[in-house]
Length: 197
Image: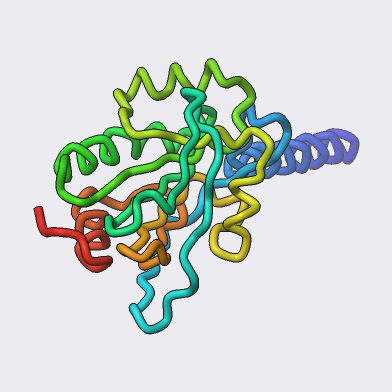
């Protein structure tokens, strides 16, 4: 009788430990990220008052299409910078909202730019852009240099994340994690000096 209780207790303890392990693994956000262990942010929105904004963000490099791109070329416009990866489930959820907001600002002094973060395959990134009809340019950041330029601003594990830059190229707002809503992004764009749509 005691032997059966021990076996039952061991089986129960094993089941509890296995359940806890699977739960923690499920929350870790692991995907085919090359073992980098990326985890999405918590959706936290931070706005920065104009007087408190740091120096302009300086990012230049090659896009997924092979073109050269420099954020400085967009000074005078509000710029929305979205960090994403095709392997990121939350990125796939927010992509239609980003595309819709981009379309709403067509020719209205707002520029969208993506940063494809450490993609296992460039083909995967291009397929992601086709799937979601993303027409704005995205930096190809397989080596992580662009993400490194944002250290201290965007934790490397907070994918997706979105930055809204004011007309001087300074960070006016930051969303760590999935975009809460199209309305939130439009409000942040307006707060950074963009037009109301």
